[in-house]
Image (cartoon, rainbow, N blue to C red; front, side):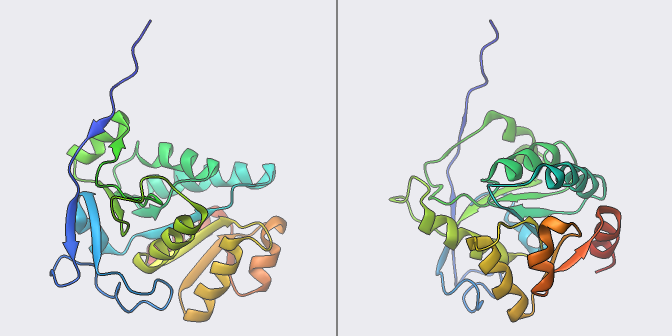
Length: 219
C-alpha cells in the first residue's frame, strides 16, 4: 500500500505593520479594520501584485459548479494570481487546479499558522516561490471558527485588487460582503448565471467565463 506523503512543518515569518514588507493599506482598509501583524509562510512578495480574490459559498448549484471548473482552468491558463481562503468545497477544488499551474496562489486560513502543518502537495509551489500562506491571527487561534472565517474573508478582500464571487447563497455572509465590497468601490465580478442573479441585481458584474478572464487581463 502506498503511504501518504508527510505534512510540511515550517516556521511562519511575522511581518509587523512598521515593516516595508507589510502589505500597503491593510491598516486602513474599510473592509478589514486594523491589524498590526501578518504571519506568512512562503513568498510574501506575491501580495505586491494584488492578486484576484476568489470566493464561493459552501452550497453551490450543480449548473454553477460546471462553470466554476471552467473558470479555475481559465484563470490557471491565463496565469492570474489568486487569493482565497480555499475553505469551501468548490474553493478547495479550484485550489487543486490552480496549484498545478504556474501562477502565484495565496491561501488565507481562518486560523493562526505559526504552528500549522501544511499538506505535502504544497511543497513544490512553495519551493518554486509561487505559494504564500498568510494569516493575521496569532498562535492561540489554532482552529477555524465562523467568526475567524468572516474576518479572513475581509482580509482576502482587502489584499485583492479585484474579486470574483463564483456563487454566493442569498443572505449568506459572502453575499453581504459582496454588497459591502461594491459599496466600497471594489471591482467585484461573478458568473453570468441565473443562480447569481441576486448578486448581479445588487451591482456585481456578471460575465461568461471567457469574457470574465479577458476583463481581468485588461485591468
